[in-house]
Amino acid sequence: MAGKYTPLEQYLHEVPKSQQKVRPIFERIEAIIKSKLPASANEMSWWEHETEGNHINTRAWSNAGWRGIGQLSPLSFEIF
Image (tube, rainbow, N blue to C red; front, side, top):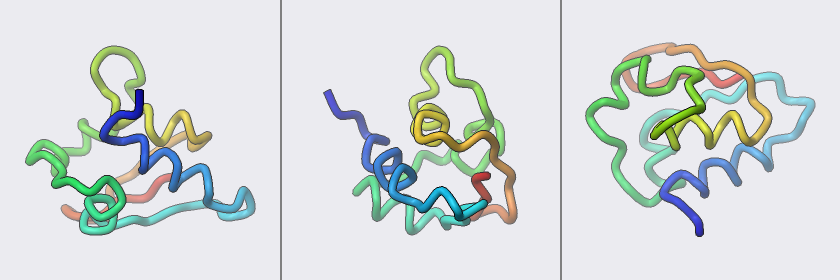
């Protein structure tokens, strides 16, 4: 069953392997998942590499083969 963040995972799978980083802004992610991000998405801890438990948002980028994340500004971050 596809989840809310499955489209984000698919998007990240399609990024060429030669590309070292992805810098999506929240508006772009919301367009990809066709839904608003929760208010907690403004906190770096919501995006950090915790793949166990209920962190389906994090599994989207880690399942796509990306290994880390860093916040660039309150509304954007970098996946590497």
